[in-house]
Image (cartoon, rainbow, N blue to C red):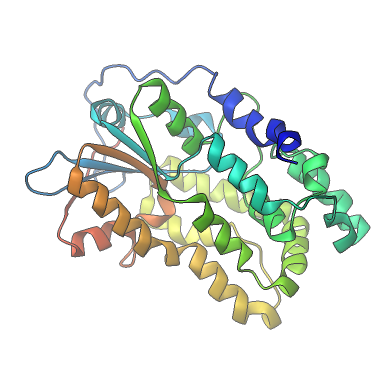
Length: 303
């Protein structure tokens, strides 16, 4: 089965690796409010600094208009990390976990909803031959990813490309198995209703994503955790008990593990790490957890 899945699982990622990079030229002077920034310097005495950059899971070219400070931090670092290492092996692992051997999803869904799902996933880079074999929780995971924009690639994939082309060591803070497990944990009886909610609320979720990106482009990091919660669909009150718990695990629940693993990288130093900007701020966010763990955390002026 894997040889048939290989083209659509990896084509988008590896075609993107052939596209031109945004120029990482030598930096020039910049100014901005230090507390409105996506770039943070993490220091431990005796080792080179580690840099944490808040990324967005989008293909917006404005989001990749990187500041001189960000470019310098990336160029100067020996190690590059993202939440998950995005390479051929991780894409194949995802395919093995989210797909069934034969088409099965249509039989589990109302035909009208399935017909609406197919173009939505196609717009995210997954053709119907893939959609037909998806497990419901896999379709949910991919529906939470923004639609592709022509000629652009998501920022985390861009970072992996930049690392490879700069011949830097590239790593992931989490394994693909850890990411998939969070979606596989959705109660089976709740998966189809959640998938229907995602399909029904696409227009509103697109507007919510625009609000998130407006704050992101202004580098208003403190607003992002709350705005990111709105990237998930609304469910009826009768479903809130399990849903709020699960959604919280996707957002605030990931911060402790991300902070711990960034700390391990900072212990060695010389790393540049991109994580979702929604994980950075707040009392329970990654940055505050790093401070409490004894690291010096400093905002770096934005562009």
